[in-house]
Image: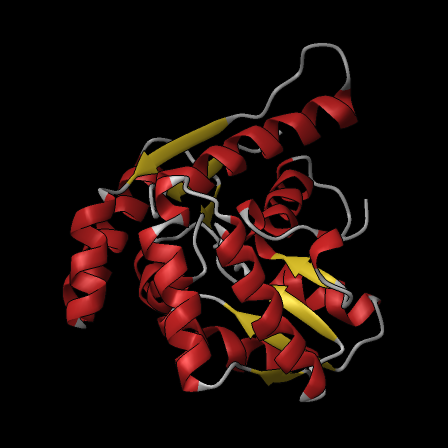
Length: 235
């Protein structure tokens, strides 16, 4: 079993899910009382969110790279960044550590490809929806067409993430808002929806939308377990 290095805390709510789901999957596969070998570095979320909204990407990269180096030096054999938005710093991380990074886009793209879909809608933070660090990897590596909400819907989705979900607040009104956004993406041609923020699965389940959903949190956690146990892509 390889030791997983987690960079979490962005936000703590979704990092809890990573820890739980990775351990559950290891126990399910190995039986008895088995659990995962993990090293977790938890970033300070308020500091990180302020730098994100200020657009201070250089400072953010420095923080994430330092975290990655500490996790590597502690004995992790590969890295998992427990956030879609923090993958904006993924290239900087990979340039500064010698252990591999399990990119969150890859298990997501593979699951969409397995489902036979080509055009999918993407929900996430404003950074994830507007910038190319996640979309371009999905498009270039998996041949997908990625649709994003209009500007008004992006702001609403982003607000719910930062004001509610990152604090563990789940409201029915916000679920209805997301459902309306997903319906509009479906009307625009989306065959499925990427839940491209690791907190969205707190709000949206598979029964909340008629289209197939691809939850990056659980897909990423499952891929981490397969990598730790050195299983094949579908093992």
